[in-house]
Image (tube, rainbow, N blue to C red; front, side, top):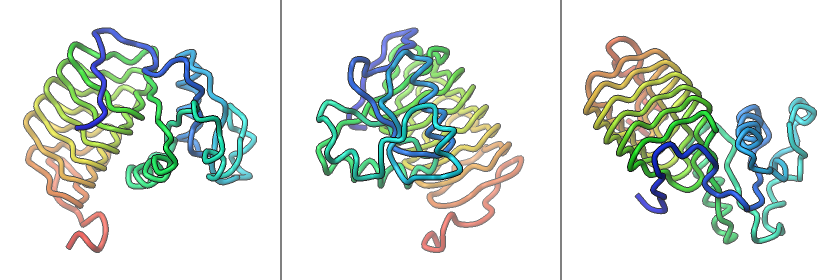
Length: 229
């Protein structure tokens, strides 16, 4: 998994302090990330993305402009992608990377990162998130409030773990997968690429790529999109 950083035990600060930071996004997800940055004493220049009349006045930082703003910004500016959808996060990251931009990462002061964990560039840990030990997190992974990831688990690039979910030890979450709020993934489970684990589901067997699973125990409900057939 490329571009990861080893984080020492009890590290509870941002991983790229000192660089100007912008949040790519203008929705509620972006507002939360700007708030995490504030809590971690990481100044944020503002949010970049579509102008949303219903969101503009609620942004905790200035709206800097649309998606073209980053192309002409100071080269020291780093970005965090403030959208909840992993596939869209990947597209935004690729577009920013083509302009030679580098991403930053954010860790809430109340998140806990244990021994020998690695956190990929662009990733964000919300308040109360816990990585126990020997956990590997890819690029632009979002770990929600009070989500827990146990020992020796690998989380793929652009994956999303929503609030209160639990991923037990020695599991693997594929690139772009989502584990929804309150879901549980038991030990030694693989969740496929772009799969979605529904809210409150309990996963007791491997989940293939590109499907939605729900229930207790979790069962396949449908493909994530028609091309998954």
